[in-house]
Length: 136
Image (cartoon, rainbow, N blue to C red):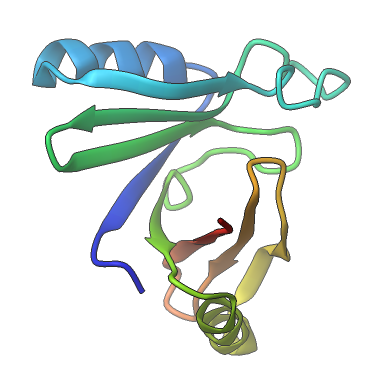
């Protein structure tokens, strides 16, 4: 596992506005902004101009954001998750299997459009984990 855990905040359609707010407040920069439409989800309900992914960075502080999707509404308790970047496919697979044993899988471990192996799981304590392994 790599050293840093990154907060991932979910919004009800105002993720871009939140990024702009954090940029102003913390004097950082917005990186890697992508809408649902640009990621190939044009046909999904109200998703075209919403963010599927965005990053804010200030020095070593990194924050990721996304807007809700039709199949996962944002409410108190599911609006933040913790992102873990892994160093190997074996490590992410083992962690995913352990978390899903008593947890709830939101997204199965799979290859993604951004070139990573990724899964999203809520553990038995209600904590949501985004597991990510960037393939080189």
